[in-house]
Length: 164
Image (cartoon, rainbow, N blue to C red; front, side):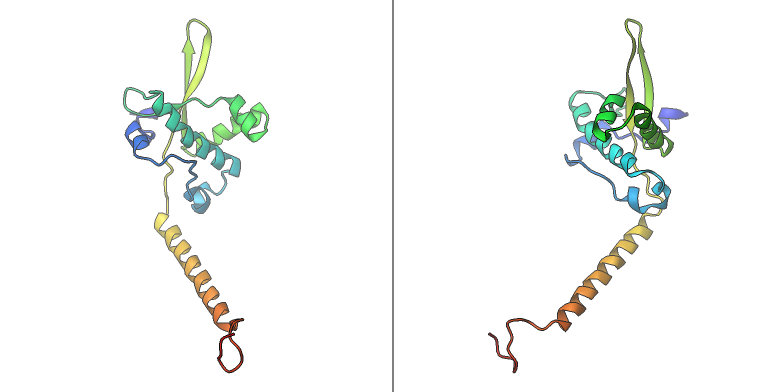
């Protein structure tokens, strides 16, 4: 078993239980594994993941239950206002990180057909660490706001403790 059989693609069942809005996993920004993936690549991943909804509705599911999409280089060029080589570079970066798996398709009648793109699950390499760091940042920010609130006298209280 190699290739697509070992690839963790999002299934139709997962699609039917997901919320329907543009989602971008925080782990792409928090986990050091993804730190060198450019922001456009992270955004493209979110767009591709969003496209799964339409693919599921259209029945674009393979024989194993994995939902696939079609997302042309021309679309990437339009969305990111970039050249074809840059669009290909973005897709290659996602593939290098295991976030997409692209399968070439050909037709005897008229040559190449749009590739199938399987969108992969984001892997969390140190989720607990990042969750704890986020909680600590939120707690510090809350404490700082509380301290500032205590130092700032209310505008509605007159000297002597009487309210205005």
